[in-house]
Length: 484
Image (cartoon, rainbow, N blue to C red; front, side, top):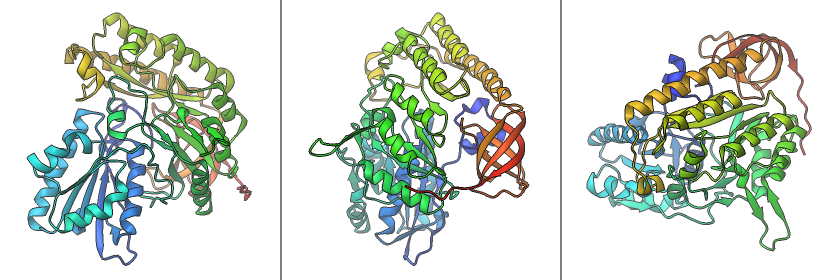
């Protein structure tokens, strides 16, 4: 999907296919006798968690494989955000169990966000897994594996108020050697009425900044050129020392990471409109290596619906934050968003307000979907899912069509301009071209020339599509060796 976040219906056929694929563990042969195969679905946090799991399993006698037929253990790291994600996992577990009929020693485990809600069904009723492990219980994997090896079912879905895995060095999976995720916090306190995350990942807790900087420095020393700081809501990052003498907020952390090396690009995801401060925006403006891109989910353009969603901001507040981003960072700062159509009781007029907000903000790209009621959420308990499916989908189509216009509009603004691009790998369409992203997170494709993966290049943009910029290298930018 060229690392873009777009709704499937606004993607190319190539991007749709990529979006449907999970992240799969890579081949690793360090001499360990047992093999782990791990598939990860959903958000970047899940992919990051799989790297932590792999590190723990590696220290306990496992290498990874990209073939489930060669695996001794299969883990599937799950997402509960959408109903079709759960169905996809169930279908995949059925395939794994077909394999287990031929290989009785195979152990199958479910990790992540489905663990708490579906542990009884998976373990006891449907009997399709051997282990169920929640996102805060990965340190317990050696004990759980020992239980499974004895032929017992094993489960730990305990949610922690402290766990951040700060001392675990992730094993990078599916890495291009250029970009890496760094988790800075876990959990969420926002309690949006449509969202399961607070129930599956627990309360917010922030990771020690020194461990974040240590991990970042190690990545730079390994040749990585970009980190993405991850959290359900990075703007609410707040850490303080035990004696309270040192406090670090997100803007301060962002600055500390930017100062590790001027050659290191810094991104972050995700921001919450109620928490993103001018201090964060001025920090982005101050440092050239902090990317001019913010993912700022709005969900709806109507204040009543936002209140029902428990988003704790209004339409006016959101548009004020967009205005602040444009005023402080610049008009060309990339802003992407999330939109939900057909939330409980949404009227046609309220839907039109979402479209009018989109017209005002003109997002670079967006993740758009129809409301899907999730069991256990506040919305499921309090509100009727009363919008007909055909109405939801019609409204979704209108949102997608408008976003396509805006994505093309934003990309056309880039024509004739020079963009600094980090070379991330070969284009999927041609081995004669590289792809990378500019500061605004837009994919850029260009002939390789004399550049190599990991270079920064200046690219003159000459053409564009809805999702991609095309151009020619005019300069390979020399690297700086300065590391703080």
